[in-house]
Amino acid sequence: QIPPDVFSAGDYEAHARRALDANAWAYFSSHAGDGLTLRANRAAWDGLALLPRVLRPVQGLGTACTLLGREWPSPLLVAPMALQRLAHPDGELATAVAASAQGAGMVVSCEASLLLEDVAAPVRGNAGRGPLWFQLHFLPDRGAMLELVRRAEAAGYEALVVTVDAAVRAARGAEQRAGFRLPPGIARVNLPPQGPAPSDLRGLLSQAPGWDDLGWLRGQTRLPLVLKGVLHPQDACEAAALGVDAIVVSNHGGRTLDGVPATAVMLPRVADALGGRLPLLVDGGIRHGTDVLKALALGARAVLVGRPVLWALATAGAAGVAHVLRLLHDELEIVMARCGCSAPDQAGPGLLVPAPPPFP
Ligand code: FNR
Image (cartoon, rainbow, N blue to C red; front, top):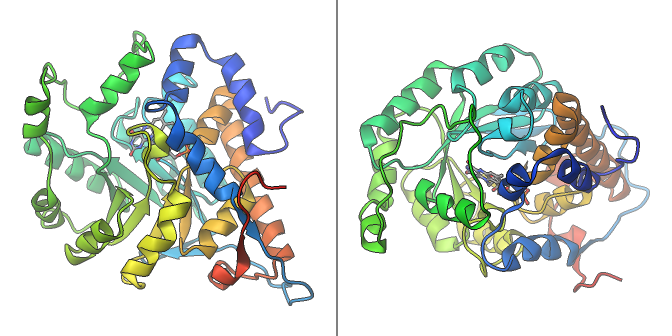
């Protein structure tokens, strides 16, 4: 059930920590290195202040988001996150049902602990739901990767999110550092069983994908392609030239490489470089409606929410996920009204003032 002392997304963290065993908590809370980037993501949102406008007409205020030819009620999507049955027995299914009920989007990870078909089926036909996207990595076996693409297409996923800042095998290293073991009965059920990982860097690098591989994938599917894990403005331009349809400015929530810039710092630079050629999304440290409005003001069309969804899932299952998405949505409406924005596209750089942390 929803704990009575949860008033904001971050309040779920302490509950999740109590609800989960040490193994699952290690996986969900792990970060690369010293956690510099994990903290930088939060600090960068905090380092921006919103400059309210008063007495503006906000009667018809709406949060509807338009992206990839589709409109949905709230500029929120659940970030792709692996192995959600570690958080709750209902796993990705609970998350998808809750996101659908709240009109938020859902990105299902290729490392999900339930079959991608089983996650999509109960929500696909829901009116008013947000988009359902499928996230994948470049697999060393391109045949197996194409098979995943075909399954996602057949199951009704509306876009493919290609994550390029984390090789599947590199992620394993982070898990090992956290002392993580997959408990019996929980597995990455959509992926082919993996052989032993290459034991040296040279072996790993021989499997590293390149821009050619992205071009290849572009030619293999008619689904929109969303590139996740871009920080460099030049990489965003490269992606635009290859026919990618949208970009997620992301550093994987600080889980894959430490000491890289916060997403709120890079988002406006990526937006500048693209000059409107591609729609942008952003993730990393989004915990409040104010963070969402700041992201919109910096040029994002929508945001992905990561850990708070897992915390809520671990605490209260589907009801928790619905609640945490509701909290973010309601906070966004309030802060939009206070800032005189009646629609997301009215948010712009004029709404922001630098407020170097610590914010007073
Ligand atoms: C992730 N993330 C992630 N990303 C991805 O593309 N595929 C995946 O399978 C996963 N798995 C995953 C597991 C866990 C436990 C976490 C916390 C994160 C990254 C995720 O999509 C997102 O980029 C960050 O989590 C966003 O940052 P916040 O909101 O968690 O700060």
